[in-house]
Amino acid sequence: MKDDDFEPPYLFPDYRATRLRAPQHPPVKLPDEWFDQASGPAFGRIPVRPEDADLTSGHPGQPLGQRIIVSGRVTDSDGRAVANTLVEVWQANAAGRYLDPVDDHPAPLDPNFVGAGRCLTDGEGRYRFVTIKPGAYPWRNHANAWRPAHIHFSLFGPSLASRLVTQMYFIGDPLIPYDPILNSIADPRGRELLVSRFDVETTVPEWALGYRWDIVLRGRRATPVEH
Amino acid sequence: MGHRVAGSPRNTRGTLTPTPSQTVGPFFGFALPFDGDAVAAAGATRIEGQVIDGAGEPVVDALLEVSQAGQFARCRTDSEGAFHFAVAQPAEGFLHVAVFARGLLRHLNTRMYFPGAEDAALLSVDAGRRPTLIARREGEVLRFDVRLQGEGETVFLA
Image 1: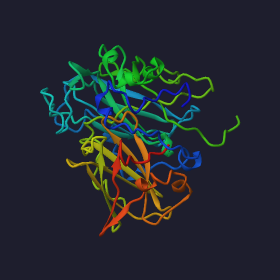
Image 2: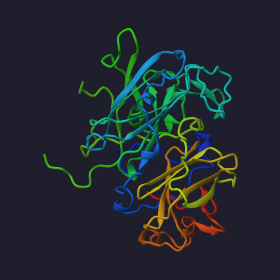
Image 3: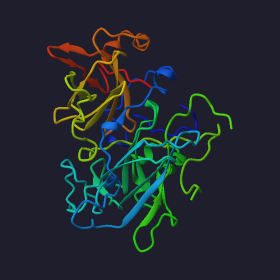
């Protein structure tokens, strides 16, 4: 791995669940044409409706919490737009509770919020979701463990190597220094790449706060284009 | 518009640093599955398997995706760590498999070869570990287990 590559390790004992799930063998590196440049999944069967980009819609009332707009641009390592790729997001509600039967945190569910969304990037690689700011929630990794507020993201991109599942955090969250999942990325420059910024330009007056977060998918064009 | 508010700095090679991975976590089951997600092709081969951790316990909160030649399917493991797919056997003889789970800070990639299929990539893998990439026939279905860690650990690819 290159020195400016900030991927987390598989085994990070502070994040307890890695201990029995991290492979002991390193991955077998295949030639780029068999893996890095192999076409990624054809995700077209996953349904995407325009209203799926607004997580505050689709219910009789408005969800509780701070309404926010999360937007950004998806590019490859050369800064070129990744257009028409699927972005999936999911998150806890404002009280820190997921609408998932596995989540037993005793915080209230919100009848007006599911917390799952999808959209396709536009021709310039841009995505945009309307949602509410998720709450922090406890987990049982260590004593008094709390996850900082975050939104899960899943992206495909053009190749196998570009597939990305990650989490977006919020600037200034006091729980960030205590979180072993984010801190599995050793280099602070790498952790910073997962933190969205408040953005006054995408903030809509009298309506919602804007947060910006750009995403870079692994991989670049096989043949460099001369400009 | 047009200015970068947040994002990757140019690195020493002049390229942008890829956004790092984080775990899919335990709570994706209400969000990522979709109707018919495990069936890539009707009347296709059924594949069944289980995801196992380093203690031999089933991984009940994993998500697998298989793809090849325009086919794509996704399946969440159940309370026994089991998953299933219906996929038509592609000319390439194998499926790309991606494994996501709580405790996997990065997802894992591997391949599932159909019985009898073989190619240079499969032969490049150590012969002792090669069988972890090959599905075996069990009656009407193909069986393909994923062992994340320890004895019989699946060969993961990059």
